[in-house]
Amino acid sequence: MRSNRRGMALLAALISVLACAPADEPPPDQAMSAVAHTAGAPGIGDPDFPTDGNGGYDVSHYALAVDYAPTTKRLEGVTTIQAAATQNLSRFNLDLSGLDVRGITVDGSPATFARKGDELTVTPSAPIDKKARFTVKVTYAGVPKPAKDSANLGTYGFISTADGAFVTSEPNGSKTWFPNNDHPSDKATFDFAITVPAGVTAVANGELTGQPTTAGGKTTYRWSERHPMATYLATATLGKFDLRQGKTPGGIPNFAATDPKFRSSLDKLYTVSGEVTDYWGTVFGPYPFSSTGGVVDDYAAGYALENQTKPVYGGFEPDESIIAHELAHQWFGDSLTIKRWKDLWLNEGFATYAEWLWSEHKGKQSAEAFFNDYHKRPASDPMWAYPPGRAKPGDLFNQSVYTRGGMTLHALRKAVGDQTFFQLLKAWTAGHRYGHVTTDEFIALAERMSGKDLGPLFDAWLYQPRRPA
Image 1: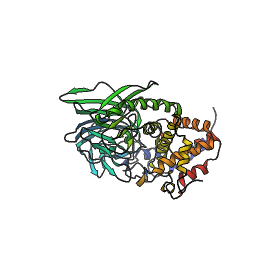
Image 2: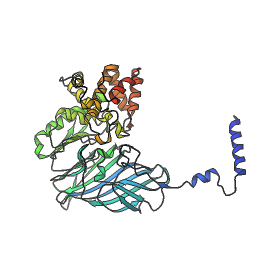
Image 3: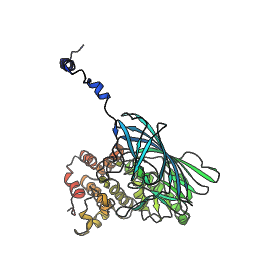
């Protein structure tokens, strides 16, 4: 038996301290067990969006049951949340905008709740211990009101349309249609049961778990996304759609849907989505999810969003470049998700550079030509005054985050060479698959794989308010 003189000395000292302790002072283990249960923070800790998300717990799964009537625009929902406490919890918050809460249970017991703005504070009948798993069930109803932010995406969240709804929630619009922990740093799996009038199609993330069922003039669609997903990527886009389903040439299930107004684009959407998905698998590493595709809805959003497995295009026929961009996000943004919104260039810069790579792949304009064209812009161009490595909360989707972010990657490619650069992309997606990422982690990996000090390059392209030389 090996002796541990230091351990024996520490034990003796501890016994001495306890022997001399006042009788009314509990020993350390007893004191630890008496740690108070406290309220979870009303924000998850992102200083740029201080009330987004919530502290004190981590969600593992959402089960959404939604019944929506396009004629009245009324939604009735039941959201069941499975989570684990990250502290001793006396109460916790959920994010929910508008909508009337009818009741909440925690582990089957009724809970009390209060509302203040978009914060729904839940007090369970008994405190929740740290690391304990618990289930929250929220029953609610009302007419969803989308979020509006002209400085970012304009109108987003749950947006009513003539025949259903257009649902795109970046950056924080998922709370407009279901209670959740509304920040990308808390990802979870999802099940959807969406009930709509017969003749209306409900499209959500992941794959259908069976054939839709119709009864009493209503049809219920059940979808399941088995891979972790940020709340802003969840969708329940509803309407009359033409559908095409099958597999990509590489064998990945492919689902395309278009509003009848865009019927002529259905085959192109299906075919190009399949081709792009397969090609990105050779460039970025294996496709991270179980299906691909896209949806074109008749709502003039003026943007597209990379909803996980189901990119949505708002009121226009997407060209190959946009499809390439949104499907690149399945790796950069969806599988690899940012911890804080300030690192948004890791999503948008990578997807923009993917557009240039797709053009290069198709024998059109090269990434170098794109880079040079943008670099010719005068030093007074506003893009150079916005350092993309620190996205601004009031202007998240600035052109610089996209274009200058993409240029950063091309500058890196030129500095380390094609072989290292493309190996880096695959190592990046493989090392953080289904997880979270930061800019510092990407820089560290690039330096490790290239053997170069890349600090000056990233500083010039990401953090300086001027045009890099």
